[in-house]
Length: 166
Ligand SMILES: [Zn+2]
Image (spheres, rainbow, N blue to C red):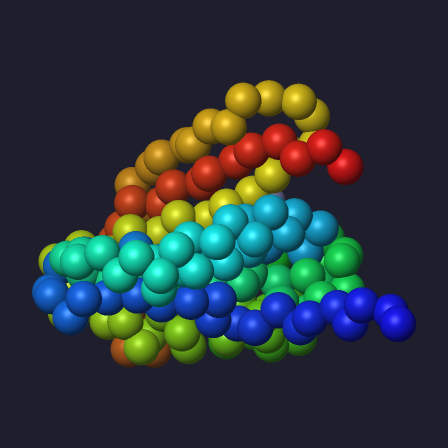
């Protein structure tokens, strides 16, 4: 019998102890051919559910390019990492598959408004195709989340990148 490949959901997991604090919003698989971030998140949430540590704030794990992940392709129409432009967001563009995925992720983020947390952190997990040690790059960023209402998310964006042998 062939092993059925399981569909990757948008929400990989969420965990909180109900105490107010920061939000850690983690994406994996923004590039569909980089499933390691999703697998890492699955393991993290399985462990959190098992050991139930008391934490302050919340953590949520979200799949990036869900359809590309399910098809094991980097992307379908365009690179999801390149769709987060002010123009696309202000004009509410939904022309390409990845623009639709971007709006789905924004809808998830809207369920975790800035006012509910002391700070919001965004961690985006990638893999490299050339051998390297795991590394992270950190920057303070401002993302326009909704041009019409004009609310902005200021957070620290962190990219975690590690090498996966193909
Ligand atoms: Zn990537």
